[in-house]
Structures are given as structure tokens and as C-alpha cells.
Length: 182
Image 1 (tube, rainbow, N blue to C red):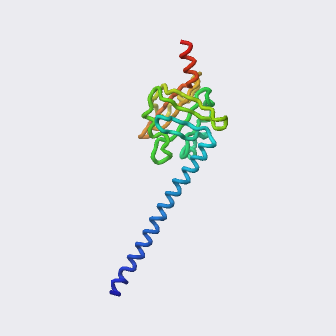
Image 2: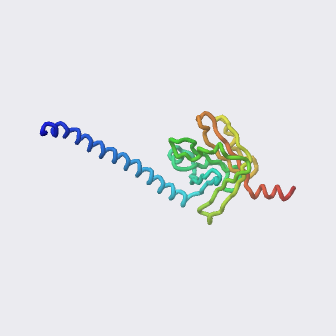
Image 3: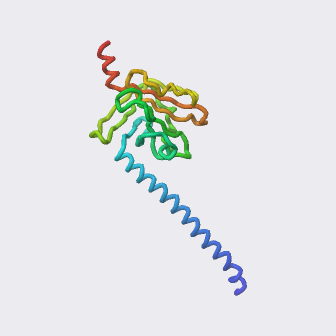
């Protein structure tokens, strides 16, 4: 009996170590997920928000498009339009590796609504109506140009990462003006 206990003791210790290590890994990844959610909520409270209700997307928009920012938010291309003026261009990842922000972007349809909400300016909401969805090559930067109207351009990778999805929405106030003059 004593011999069996001595043989099982190392296995018991190894089992305890495995349980403790497993619990540590679960706690670490659980903590990272929770801390990321808290950080994201803080960003939503402090920055411009981008929303596509039909795709259940609501993310903060930070100025710039560096990789660190794009891990937690959408990024505004510096030098493109302002809120409600010109071609306001944003981008975000379409990937399970990063923030998973635009994974369903290919499901958007003409007529769907997108919003930019200015948190600093008394929550002014800019509504855009989707007018176009296309796929372009990464080198086709003309989508960032100012076209003389007030639009929102949303850019993300395709699922395979070889091309870019581009969604264009026209500011609803501008669309209402066009409708009333016809």
C-alpha cells in the first residue's frame, strides 16, 4: 500500500500543477478580455463613435490609423473630411485576430444607415445612407479623395486580406436636400 502511495505522489503533484497552470491561463485571458471591454467602453465615452445598427457595430473612432489604435477601434484617416463635411474616411480590421470590428461589413446593403456620433459636441449624430459597396485593390487610394460632397467612406480588408472593402454613405441631410429639390 505504501509503495502505491509513493508512486502516485508525483502524479498527484503533477496534476495539481496542471490545474493551477490551467486556472492561471484562464484567469489571464479572462482578465485581458474584461480589461479590453472596460477600455473599449471608456473609448466609446470619450471619442467619436461609429455605428451600423443593422450589423450591430458600435466602435470608437480614433484619429489616425496606426496598428495599435486599430486593435481597439476604427481609425480616421488624417487629412480626410471632418464630421459632416467632405469625405470622412475611416478604417478598421476585418479579422478574428484583431478587434473584429468590421467582420460583417460585406453584409451591408444600399439604403442601410450608418452614424457618426460626436461625443464632444453634445452627442450630435450624423446619419449617412449607404449608397455604394465595392471591392478595390489596396493601391487604389482614390477612395480617400474629396469628391465635393459630404460622405462617409468605410474601408476594411476582405476576408482573405488581398483587397479592400469600401462602403460609401451620403450624409442624410444632403440626400434630403436632393430629394426636396427634385
